[in-house]
Amino acid sequence: MLQRPPDGASKNANCSQGRGDRSPPPTPRHVPGPLLRGLLRAPARLYDWHLGWLLGNRFLRLTHLGRRSGRTYQTMLEVVGTCPGTDEVIVMAGLGSTADWYRNVQARPTLEVAIGRRRFPATWRRLDEGEAVKVLASYEGGHRLAASVIRRVLSWLVGWQYDGSAAARSRLVSQLPVVAFRPADAA
Image (cartoon, rainbow, N blue to C red; front, top):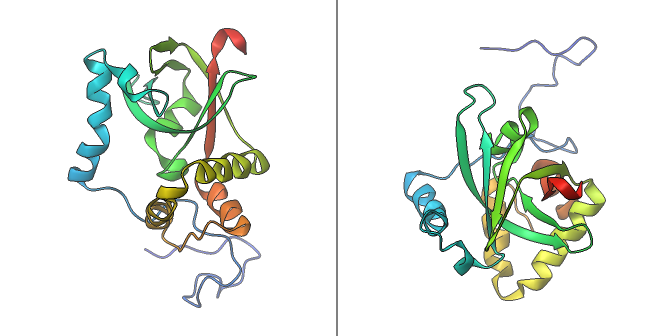
């Protein structure tokens, strides 16, 4: 089905002329298959068995409500940074702004964040580009041995070659929201 360009837009705007200097698509191009999703859900089992503390502060489990169904969901997210001064825990929406958990927390309050032995009702905020770039740079710096794997995974998620440069980081955080959760009573 063809879409009309918005009023005032060139009729050739949707032609396949290459992306040029236009911004990247708002959503990632790849979604994990069932096997990879199963592996990614494995840390959740530890929280189910009250062993989440074995993961330390590397992963958190977000409990949230479905935006349409109102059903309770739990999502495991990798922690990419912390801010001890504000008690914030920072994650990235690896599947972009269309990730269900991200859309759900925008529509309804977050129920709980569990990280290690801590559990708390949380508020959230999306980091601005400058903050997000710093967090991502710090994360990559703290994981130098895994940097090539991290870059490969991020490249796969966004559909373009992420090289870890400042320009690439800015482009990446414009596609993949970086979100901070903090205890609701500290907000």
